Length: 192
Figure 1: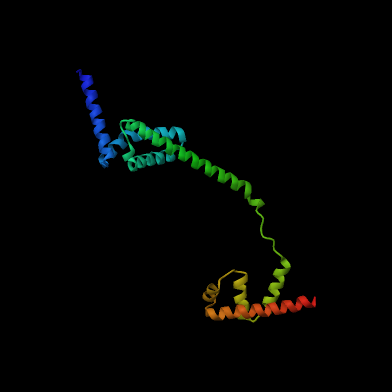
Figure 2: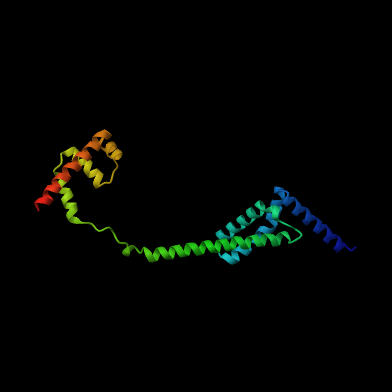
């Protein structure tokens, strides 16, 4: 046996031992594999994706996937480097798909929601004026409560907190005011 053959056998045994340690969950084996193969995976990802951050992300995901699925690695079917590149290819494909989905969503949003094309709710100014007139007819405390409820869209509790008024009083003001306003509006509607 020549010196080259002997070194080749030793190298094969060392690789086989590293593969076995990796499959057994030896974290130091993962560290060795990462140091040896992460530059290859990173370069491969960078060439495909063209973005350093995405390439770093793919590299990390590749080794996390390899570690979590290490029991499925079969050194009789493929070398560890080949298996890692296969995982990297899937992670790169996932990244391309995610980019495509984001691009499609972005384009759809641009088509459907151009700032100058967003329709606002149609406001019936006559109803707003009518409501403002009716609010003026209420007593001061009830008027403040109703303005906060209708124009500031506050909840009963928020009105109570803001006006330092008991919650029951706020609810009573709203209920009585609505009944009064309804009665006046019905009378004015019948009269017109």
